[in-house]
Length: 435
Image (cartoon, rainbow, N blue to C red; front, side):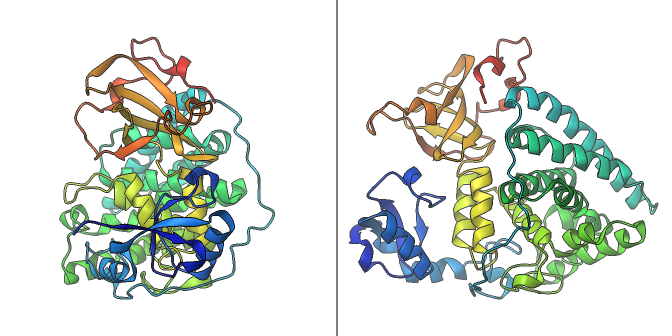
């Protein structure tokens, strides 16, 4: 049965309804995604303050919320899979002591050059660390700490460059990629929250070390972590405790260890290893947790088809105050955008490409590197379209927008053939990318 849309006055809205459209453009409102379930009276109050009416999907009301929560996608992928259902937990807003307001200090083009070398060095440091652990030796963690500081400095200068590089590069090992990408997502979110560079260093180091415990698990179990039996999952979840045990003698700070120990805990107590909830989870571990979860949803794996980033963003928004604190979810989405860097998209005119960066003020209009024309033919020379700038002087009917997100690996959309550094190449994009 198809979904039917009803026009509903905002004063008649109820918790559980799915709002699919507004009486004004989404980017003119504070809602970070287009389409969401109403989960609290505060959602209704926000809608009342911005709209007179909204469109509600009749087939996706409260019963649909329950039906969705009852689906078991795989261990680690939904709240229901961890046995706690969709219990919500309300807490006071996050309070960051003396938050830092970061300014973008360099262009994407310039910072990408630094980021490429930085990720090469990071992967090398991680590979040496994991090799030593698997050999039963005590590794030197100083290179990981040093590389984290450089990552923090890069994200502070320009948050999109490291994110772009981490999303579009190929990695030799899944664990390296997972640790690195988790660290990048977390640092970008931490920057948005206003964490100072000292805290960002603890956060990034903890994320890079968060997967250490997996070196003590059977490789085949790690390779299929989203397709595990209950017994295997019980073994798998021990990786957190194993990681803490391996790291405690090294002399790392308590803040770093708290990230390793708490990155799989969840807001409503449905996580592991301790099942703690709410304010008992350290802030840095909360940030690492949402970053690690998001990466697990969108990362290409042999044992599952990844979500598109836009669907993962929508899922996160649906989980606010369930598995993740609401203001942390909103800060994460504000930091990465509705269409994060590296998202393959099709535009409303049929052109296809990959998101390079997003505009916080125009969340639905990112900057897109177009690789195919409307007939899905490869372009002879690459072009970047800043949708926010492109649509500035155009009417709603003339505006260019993202029509759909495309699956990872969509044929003909490999960004490796394009160069955003400004190097001499027929695919050079450096001159086309502005701040």
